[in-house]
Length: 542
Image 1 (cartoon, helix red, strand yellow):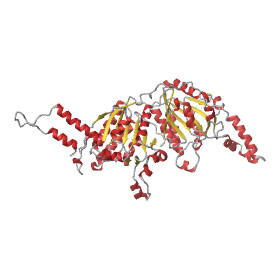
Image 2 (cartoon, rainbow, N blue to C red):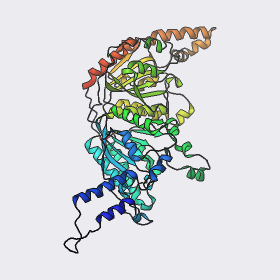
Image 3 (cartoon, rainbow, N blue to C red):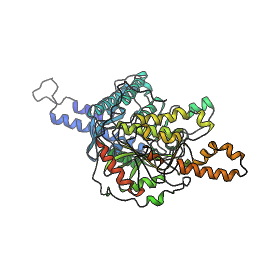
Image 4 (cartoon, rainbow, N blue to C red):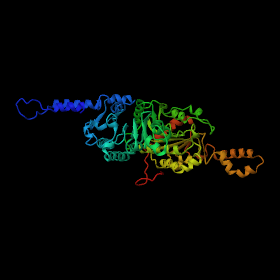
């Protein structure tokens, strides 16, 4: 019996009856309040005096400490703190702690309502049982009804084995609610401990997954099973640690060194998101002049199409105060996906990154971009696409791994998006990759370009080699003829105004005016209304 239970029993023992009656004394309201205060104090202390110390010794915070970091000070309202499981067998009937290992409730982040639940590893290792799952189900239903974001703080050992299939059914209810809430309210998973087996699918169904190095792992089958089946030896972090999922699998949005920094970024991300799909993202006053000229852009982007530069510096120069939140920075680095503000209003930016693989599109980049575009479209976040793309990555591996269907995901996402869309071609935009990067032909609202743009089926060198291959081969001076034909092709079909002359580009702008042009264009499109055909849902490429 725990200290809490002993004290509660003592409070409920009948006292002496002054009238000599044998009836039990009715406890006063003050006594009941004392009992409640004792119970509530125990909720924070954990199941035993050493439980919190053990959690800290693992390098981890407790569930309530995490909630305090996530939410505004003093804003948390807990629901079902007195919930206890009803299971029996395997000694469970003697262990019935309050909360059943999960803390649920709501509070505010920057003054806006956010729902959250946090596994309490001190109780049953945070394992999910029937009562535990019911609390999460109720919270998810409330978040969906109230139209507010949901943040899960995950630190659990999976299903509670002693409760058998009831625990598994609890996960099914969570998965279903994840799907029902998808595109309706933002869902963020923060991994702060182990997450194995079927439990890993809930974070995978949410919009963003944050992980902390050394303490968080995600995998379907653990190292022991992997070794037994395949003979491969791997550690938990090597199999499913934060860096693995941030840089290799693409499961994680970002990886952090500590919980404090992680939860601070979760708060920042929430400040950029609407509460639900019926609202616009929150705007805030901007002290960055919307008409500010971006003089640095003239030197940041070389005119030579094959020279490397960092697209992040371009984004920093354009957006408010140079601040942005990058999604999946460590994965598919050849495509950047960021949330930022222009004149105080949130915008999603998709940009090729010439500093990584020359900005080429491959399978990973297409998947990353497609998911980001779909998220922005679901939550009314306008899209700006910065284009400097040489094409799709050629190669046997890419073809065999399905670049066709994976590349089609990005195409599908853009074509299906109804939010304001603006594309800006900085330099090269070749072939099918140009079309996929939100070109005029697939429905962008405004297509802009810098004077350094080269929009074509392919680069001049490749085009000349194809068109004039016989002439070049028959010439006494192949290299001279090739150079002449390359220049001819470039001057006739790749000059900066070719696409604009044909209405495929709305305007060729001074790079220094990029910020002001984007802000004015987005203001014009703010009331955009687009109607998709009536259908149950599309069948996007798998």
